Image 1: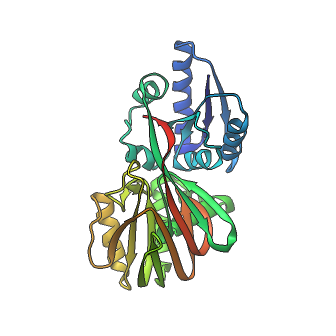
Image 2 (image 1 turned 135 degrees about the vertical axis):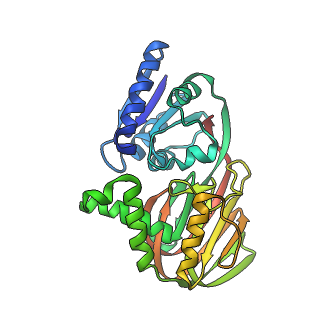
Length: 307
């Protein structure tokens, strides 16, 4: 029995298209299934918990949607040893699919998940936010600062009903990114790697911790990230010259970002972040509001995913 959690609105309707193709394959192969459609934020998290807390033996749970929908499913699910996840990318960015090297061909993806794929044990991350009590899992990346501010602004704009232009895919990301760039103010802070190494920064624009190399729809902020190595790949952009942020973004978009003045990379199993004033925080593009103190850790090899 396959259980599907589908976001029909992901990728501006791509989620429904992928589901309709998947349904035809299921019927063709006479496979049993149940499907649940999300209607609003939080639905995927609640349904994933409901399905995985019932002690009914092995469970095969497939998500159709974008990285945000996958985040909700993984964050809400009880990660029992007999729960196996599948993922059919149907979002605008699909950074998880890129990080795992998945095909962009819908027909191949469906066959991989439902027939041909092998189960692989992958890492996931856990974010804990200071005194707020917020604890979230992530499978792509989590971070604080400029990148999270773009995510927060997009999600907040959707809830508040911003103009239709600001809601339209890449154009929305571009316009929101420009606005957040103009308003970005560097802050002082530090990171602590594996409780043993402290590194201070005077002009933090953002810090991102990665399980997979890309975020934001293809920005390779952590080219060395590997979801199988049991480690977080950390990217810190710290400079008072915001034009260097533009250069970093262009390099990360067109090719892998490299270490340079204002950009530094680290690897660790656990990371603590402190900033002198609150900054936006995200997990897999989902807003975790504004924080000053974060703890992040990698949980190695505990996520069973069909690839």
